[in-house]
Image (tube, rainbow, N blue to C red; front, side, top):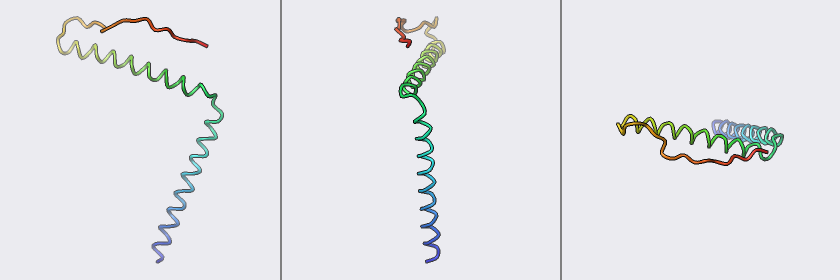
Length: 81
């Protein structure tokens, strides 16, 4: 019986700790402007796409397809506020 009580207390402490961490994170997130996170995600995606392109070129070169050339070039309109 005593062992059950200790386990129950530990579960309760863990739940309260998780709730505290969640609330703390939400309070910090409320200080950040709404569009900031979204713009950061877009930038992160573009950086990953750039790395993907570099890896594709490197793989093509390793596979012996001759001169490494970008698969396509296109102009991308970037909006600046």
